[in-house]
Image (cartoon, rainbow, N blue to C red; front, side, top):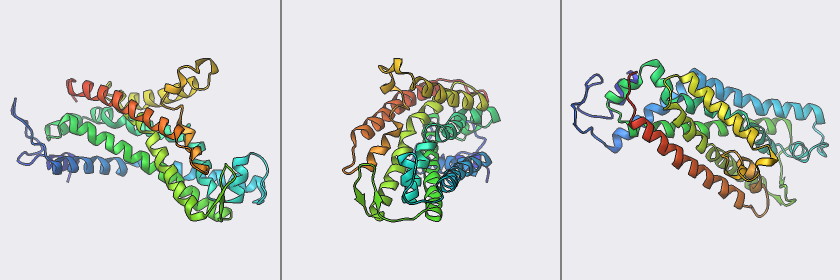
Length: 302
């Protein structure tokens, strides 16, 4: 079954090529919406590009763990930066180290590629018009694209976390975990915190998904949308590094990304994490609304 045919199932009573009657109302059902979301998820995760991006993210923790093992000789005492020393003492810390390395560059670049290509990619391949005729409905299609983007965020961060956990277990000891606050917790509790950190990091990328979705509605070129989204991430990261811009930096969507480190304290500090999640919700609301406004009022010719 082709993708257009599967989306057509979201609107019973219409064939894939049927053009809706002017002024008619398309059916809106929960089953239809779920079918569209499933179609988008299947499309996203079956693409060779998506699989390749997840593969690159999986290799990153392996490289970090291997380098740390070689440089430290697996010494339990550890020398050098404190975070690296904690990796040598407990392999679970490789999860947090890998996420800290991937979050500023690798994760946003992969998310930017997927989000930027969401609408523009359909337009460039000529399938967008048929999706809307199917009928998918513009609002429902946007929601499905955003949902698929969030799912990729979770898959990407989980890939980094699982690869780091497997590498850490293979190269370093796993035992009770000493947090960055100096307190010691059991391995089981630390593993739950790792799951929480992965979820927080995935949510931290929600604002970028909304931005990429908006950029994707502005052009019919998937490559241009992807390049613009990734370029915007790099630009914002640079702006966030200038002390002279300290007044506006707290409002940049990247500014609070690394606050997940506060979850590795006892007790956990939630202030920075909640600021980050609140800022992401703001970006989702603003750029999600902008994407909806642009997309619903746009003439679809491809």
